[in-house]
Length: 347
Image (cartoon, rainbow, N blue to C red; front, side):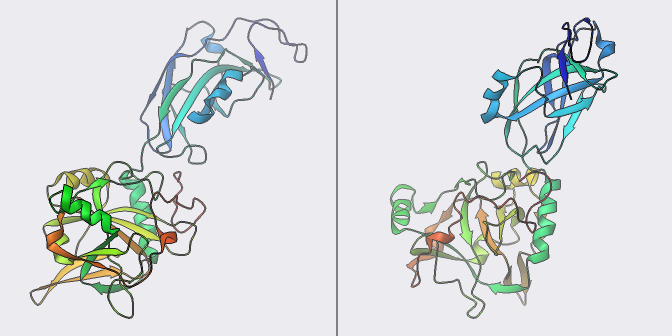
């Protein structure tokens, strides 16, 4: 494909001088999702009827300097037929969630020989794609359900940290562990990363003992709290994410939020809610007047509790196993090539 600036004569194509095509200006980006957006712009009506195509140059923001060297004879990344504006740009193969992009536009007129006459490039506009929506998270949820496995009983939630952490909580926070902003581990499009405040707990048990494993990636001191203190009919349960870190085992992030709390309101707007009595990951039900809890065997559950938790509600003790730092998921990046835990809307 050859491109020729308006107003010039090309010896290769024999295109005579013609009136310049209008240059797009006042570009507007709207209806942004994790893998699509709408774009519109203003342009002079002069020669507007000759426009057959739009060329859209879309770059991740870190590569925006390449636009400084844009030449008329360099094909742009996206070519679209001239349709009424705003125009939808969609594609998970070139748009990722929660990513900053730059975009510039030029108008084009396709000639009979297949070459294009093009306008000048517009100004460069910056925008950021959105997080996964509930629809996308539901797709992840359904994928996670496939491999969750059978349910095993549990009786406690636990949180491993260094001794200094618990000393600090006692001295500076009145004995109450405080919610903190979730890191960027997991799916890049997760709406809870860097936004939801909570306290991280584990709940998986060893198959042969029914108790928490003695090893830990996060520290040699473990806080244990009875499951009913955090998870009960007065709390809501949400699905947050499903991911792996280039390993055979997978992680599911769940959020427990007291009904009506700020964390509950945050999750209600963004995450699929689970039935606490009937789901594939973590359940809470009453049997003979006693609360009974189960967790999925074949995924590692990461549970985020959205309210402060007083240390007096449980116990702190040193583990007898090893500290396996290599298993830590802190800011862990999701494997974008895994077919088990990825959906086709970016990573």
